[in-house]
Picture 1: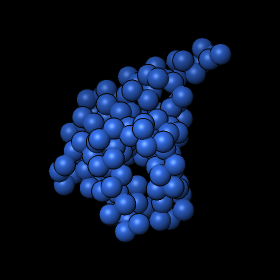
Picture 2: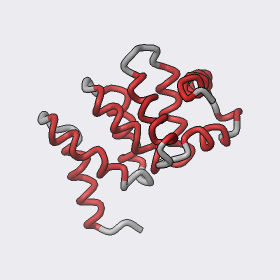
Picture 3: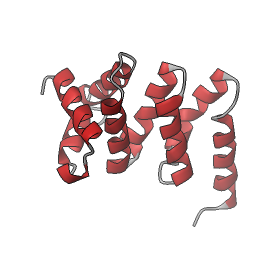
Length: 136
């Protein structure tokens, strides 16, 4: 069961993630990753990953579900990789590659272990593109 202080803390983070101030929004992204087990935090990170106007915030937001969101989190990121076919999503792919290549998180092994039936067409495209980038 969640305690009141963590609920209040998360509420503050969610509010800060909608701030008009870019630095405030950027500063809370990694903190939201600690709450990936909460649907409201996961949803907000996915919203940032998909719709923020600042590329670095989208990349930072994608890192959190990759690292801390389990299979569901990585699937959301792979879906976004495959859905967006523009040069800005390349930054997210590079981040995933770096996490894997530097041994910080086994992105490719984790992605390949996901039951293929769970992969949407976009996620399959995202995984294919990631494998091509990583040359594996």
